[in-house]
Picture 1 (tube, rainbow, N blue to C red):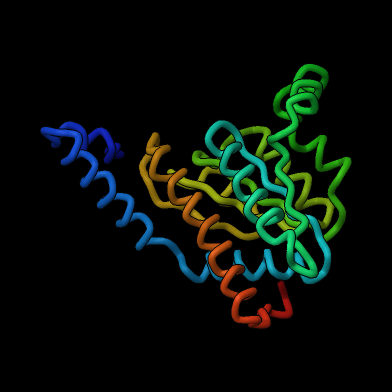
Picture 2: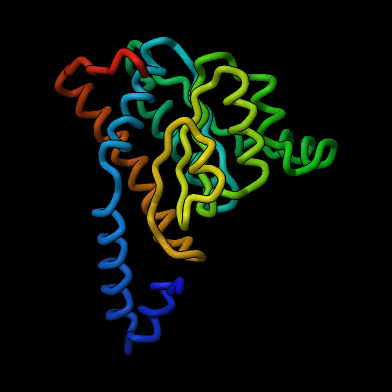
Length: 213
């Protein structure tokens, strides 16, 4: 039986303070259960994209759309002073483009149509979805997979279709409907990635990226 741990925490809490502690404890349990090898691969893939001059596209819906924007901001603007900044873009930010595509092609097409315009072989597409089943996200990943892109899925709950079809995956183990902890964990991945990159810059460490990535 799937138990929503956030609702359980609320039912068992007699005050906001106790609920806060239970929420944070549960989030820490989730973070400690992550696949750290997969996270390491994720960082190496992003660095590898920079090394070859590829673009990195982020996409998602709702809270995941803001996470996509945050990733792109931190990765591109955060490295703007580097000799070779990261070419990171969010496909969630242009209201005119999104509403035009939604109106003319349907909401399921808002990301894939942008990839058809901008994506080149070996570009990286990072798809963010708590459920892993958002149709517009799945369509974008399928397009990238069949056009020599490199796809990374950041999912939650049971991982959905995204966990299965992305070339690389980081799954946030959680129960259905636990959007808060999943989106929190996705943002931790953003700050973890950028913390590593800032460390590289400060200590001038050369990234050791696997040949096959």
